[in-house]
Length: 456
Image (cartoon, rainbow, N blue to C red):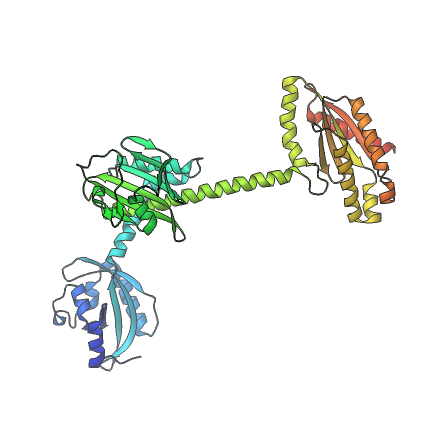
C-alpha cells in the first residue's frame, strides 16, 4: 500500500487528464480535473462530503459493496456507474479503484473518467438494432439476389421514416466502380460504371482514402484533385447532405454505401450510427453471396466427383438414382423402352479371401473397363455396390443385350492369364417401359441375376 499525502503526489494528480478521488466515507481529496467534471467550483465545496451523494439511488448499494471490498484489500475490474454532477446532470463514469495510505490512514483511491459519449453511442446502437429493418435483413439474406433486396428494403425504410432520400451501393473492381444498386430520383439504377479514367468524384475519394465521408452539402465537394462529377439530375439550388461508408477487405475498399438527403446538414448523429449498422449488414450480405457461390461451386464439384466411381471409372449409384428418375419420365412421355441388367462378379469374396483386397480391386477395375469398352455412348454402366454392377441399354432388346453380355464374358475370360483365375459374371435382364417402371425392372433383374448365380 502506498502513501500519497506528499506534495509531489498531489501535484502529480492535479496535472492528470483524468479525475482523481481519495475518500474514506468522506471526500479527502479531488483533483482539478474531477472538480470540473462534476461542475464543482472548489475543493472546499465537497471536502468531507460523502461521495455516495453523487451516485444515483440504484447504484448506491453497489457503490458501498465495492468500497468495502477495496478497503478489505480486494481488487476489482473497472466499474461503470451512473452518477450526477453538482447541478444534477446525468454523468456516466468509469472508475478504477484501489486502496492507499492518505495522511497515515487507509483510504480508497479512485481514477475517474467520463464515458457519457460511449454510453450514449451504445444506447443509440441498441435502438438501431431493434429497428424492424435490421430484423428484415436476416430474411433477405436468404433470397437469391440478397444485395439488391437489402438495398430496396433499406431505401423503402429510409424513405418512409424520412431518414434519407437516396441510396446507392457501389462495388470496386480493379480500376472501375460499379453501381450495384441505387435509387436516385424515383428510379432504380443498376450496373452503372464509373471508371477511374474519368474525373475523380466522391466515390473515388472514399475508395482511395478508405475513410467515411460526411458532406453537409455534396455540391460543395472538392478535396485536392477530387471534385463532384455529377449527382444524378438533382438541382444544385437545393443542398443535398451526403454520408458514405466504405466496406473494406483488409486495407482495400471493396464497396461503398452512400446515403443522401435533401437539405444542408440534414443528418443527425443517430443517422450516422444507423448508416454504419446498415453498411455492416450489407457487408454481411455480400460475404453471404460470396460464400453461397463458393458452396454452389463446391457442390457442383462434388456432384461431378459423385458421378464417377473412383475405383472402376463407371458411374456411381448416387448418380444413377438421380438419372433414372429423369430418364423414366422420358420413357413414359415418348413411349420408349430400355433393357436394364444387374451384374454380380462370381465368387468375389473368395477372390478377396484367397488373393487379398488389392487383387480384388484390380478385378473390379478390369470388369469396369470391359463393361465400358463393350457399350455405346448412349448406354449406362454403374457400379451399384461392392462387386455389383448395373447397365442400362436404351431402345435395346433383351436378346441383343444377352449377346453383348456373352461377348463381355468372353473378354473377361481372356484375362485368366493375367490374374491366374477365371473372372465370370452372373446377370439378370429386365425391361423398363411405360407399363413397367424402373423399380419393378430393378427387382426383376436382381431376381434373375440370383437365379443364374445359384444355378452355377
